[in-house]
Image (cartoon, rainbow, N blue to C red; front, side, top):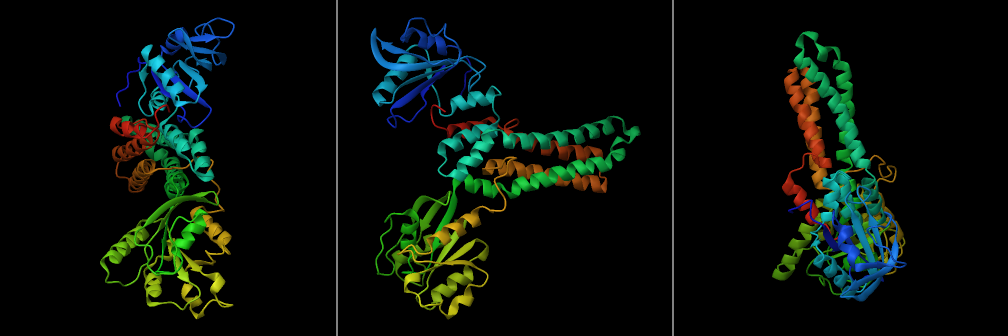
Length: 460
C-alpha cells in the first residue's frame, strides 16, 4: 500500500444500499476545502468557519443544483480518527446518492482511499497501535457476542497496555545489564541478580499466560471449527440442521446421502461455530463415497472440536468402534443421537464412552439440544475464566510474536542461571523486546503491515 500523507482520501464508509443513511468520509489536510464549495448549510455560513465536531444540516449541490439533503461534520486535527482533518457527509443511503457524492469530492481533489487506509493513517500517526488497528477490522467482521467483546477490549488498548508493561520490565533489566557491561568493576548485575530474576520470572509468567490463552482468543474472534462425523445414517445432517435452525442439509432414511462436506456458520450460546457436516465414515469400495470419506477425515483432523455422532437406538457397529478408537477425547464430544428411539437406558455399550464427554439428544425433536449447546460453550470457553481484562491475543501473528518473546525470555532466564555472560543475556532481552514490538507494530515489517490493512474494508 503506497501512502502519501499529503493526499486527501475519500470513501463510502457504510455498506452501500444497506440502510437509510450512508456516510462519505474524507481525511487529509484538504478535506474541509474540498467539501466547503459543494455544501451549503442552513442559515448560511460555510464549513470552513464551522466549529469542529458540530453537525451542520444543509444541502450538497452539484452543477448548481441540489443533490441531497445532508448532515456534515468537520473534525479538525488532531481530534479525529486519523488525527488529520476529517469530514463526514451523512446523506441518504441509496447507491446512486452515495456514489454521486463520492464522485463530487473526488472531482474536487480527493483520491479514492485504499482498503483500510483510514485506520492505517490512525496507526502511522500514532493514535492507535497495531493491535487496536486489527481490532477495528475484527469488530467490523464480528459475528458473535464473544468475538465482539474480546475485540472491543483490544480496541480499548488492553492488549497494548499488557505488552507495554512487559516491555517496561524488560527495559529495566536491559538498563541494569547495560550499566554492568559499561562498568564491569561495579558488578552491578551480580548485585541485582535476585531482582533481575524476579522481573524475568514475572514477564515469563505473563507471557506464558498470553500464549496459553491465544487459541481461546482466536476462537472468540474467528469462531470454533466444528466437524460433525460418524458412520452413515446416525443423524449427522439432522444435527447440522438442528444447530442451524433450518433445513440446510438433505436428510433421508437412505444411508450415505451426504457425499461431500457441507460448511455453514451458526451462533450457538454466544459462540460462533464454523460447522462442517461430513460424509458417513465406513468401509466402502465405491469411488465417490471413498472420496467423501477422505474429505471427512481431513475435516476431522482440521477441526477445533469434533462432534462424533452415534445412533443411540442401536448397538455399536464396527465402524463406530473404529471412530471411537481413533478419536482424541481431548477434542471430541460424543453425541448420542436418536434419544426419541432409545430404550429406557443407554444400550450396554454406554461404558465404552468412558473418557469422552458426551450428551444424549434427539436432533429430530431437539430434546437435549440445550445440553449440547452448553457443552460446546464450556469446551470453547472455560466458564471459570472470564475474558481477560488485560487483553487477549486474537490471531496467529500476535501468537507467533508472543511465543518468540517467551522463547527469548526463557533463554535469558537460563543465561542468568548459569552465568553465561551479560552480553549474551542482553542479546536475549533485545530479541524479546523486538518480538513484543512486533505485536504492537513498533518493529513490524512494511510488507506485513500492507497485508494486514489490505484485509480491511474500503472506508475503514
